[in-house]
Length: 206
Image 1 (cartoon, rainbow, N blue to C red):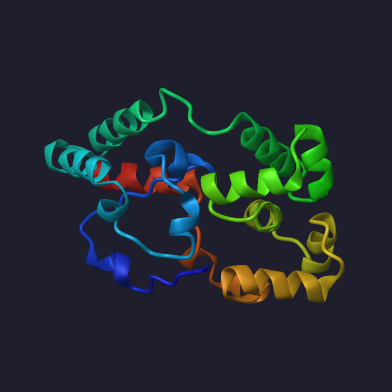
Image 2 (cartoon, rainbow, N blue to C red):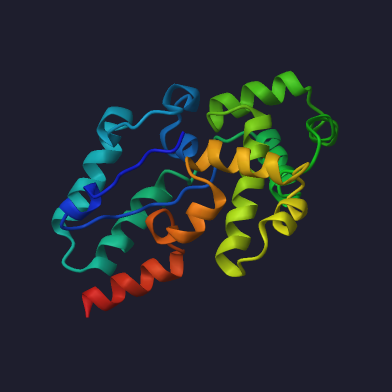
């Protein structure tokens, strides 16, 4: 569910954004992701040990890059022993590589799992159904192309596999909370590319 932060981030002296893979939080915390879906939670309520380690990194780091390095080490330690299902990784890769346009039956066939089995894995390890993961993947495909080369929405929706412009507009608004046109006008309110964030951080540190 889209959550509007408004001017809240302006109240913080520092804001650290960590982008995880779809099953990254499960790998790091080992907890059922369905419990966290559509909620805004404090990290301390999810994993107090991880919260404490990251908080200590904030306190002890003298520069932004030192902080990023410390956080990397903490998170990579949580990824040394893979707990994510091989079947889920394969299914997620199939959906991602097809930009969300592959049929769920075909995903199950190629993974040699039933759709029901894969559905349980997706709920536990990603926090959403396989179908909704495909829907979100398709939406992210649209965002990527809007970012890199804005084009006519009709052509973009067709490339992304939507039935028609109306279906595209409806799905876009349901996921982002705004129309494609409004998103494009106010894009910086929603999204920053990773390289742009790095450039902003570097300039502030200098």
